[in-house]
Amino acid sequence: LGDYICSLVGTIGVLAALMHRQLTGKGQTVDNSIFDALLSAPSVWMALATYVHDGTVLTRTGNNSDQTAPRGIYPTKDRKWIAIVGGNDIPTRRIFMAMRPELDIVEDERFQTVSDRFRHRGELEELVSRWVAAHTQQECVRRFQMFDAPVAPLNTAEELAHDRHVRNRSVVVADDDFGEVIVHDAVPRLADHSPGPPRLGADLGADNRAVWCDLVGLGLAEFERLVGMGVI
Image (cartoon, rainbow, N blue to C red):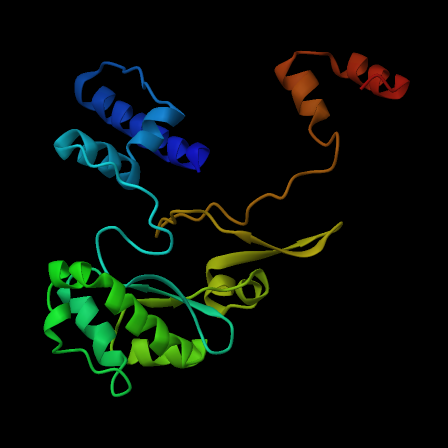
């Protein structure tokens, strides 16, 4: 996680430096580190800021959020899982409407505002968990989607491999050694430019000539001689 976040932050820094050079003609040193990148993550920074503000030490919350409810992953009737994110009042109301008529808490005074729901989060999480456990994953997703409520199934690797959205957004590449391989396409994608399918990697030694002759400066005859001797 640290490597990915640091890389993304570093990329933003490089783009900002290029923009600065374009505007001023001067270059920039991009100071970036994994530590700084992770420290800027919202959950880490919020814990630090909360302590500095009032001395509260935030601790582990498990499956639940320390800010909103309902929020987490919930087991379904068919032993699968769904993720539900109830943030502000509008999406949460949609969640409540999707669970009708089995669970009717749309007008429940305990759950009208973010503060109300957080104050009664134990009761709310219990009610939502019970409702989800009485329905299959597909039933939950279908009901929530009818009301445009925030929900997502937690897929296994097998389910992801056959998911239409994954297939449509990714690239299936034929490889001589491995057969059909699915790899992620370029992210982000530009409307007027496509870099093409990702390269899986050439055979061992495929780039030797380019490295030794073009980069190192070895003569072609010497290169071929060393290849013939098994040195390269």
